Figure (spheres, one colour):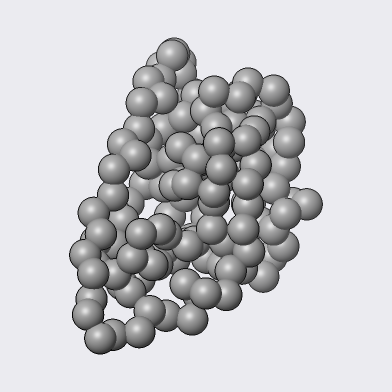
Length: 147
């Protein structure tokens, strides 16, 4: 059994955006909840915070902004980072066209497992930023990590 040892937390922060001329963006590009939490960054090492206070079992559209990051992490993050024991990272591809929506899964790293648990999500490209359709992670303490 392999142990989780010093995973590189260098994730790509580059996303491709293409403008669609004359097409309105989806409603979620205007109606979302903003999260500006700097403790969601992989640089933050305090632990045991849960996303149960932020998210419920009913998904909501959110946009991440500020010093904690604007994107969900897109590579495995070490345990005990992002203000939690089990940080969540998006394991798929971001939508490249403005207005496009992609479905996928967030993996939560715990112990020696990069994808100990998963949560289904949607991501919308809002022509310059992304919004995420997120719900409460499967267990506590799990939390979405941003870059």
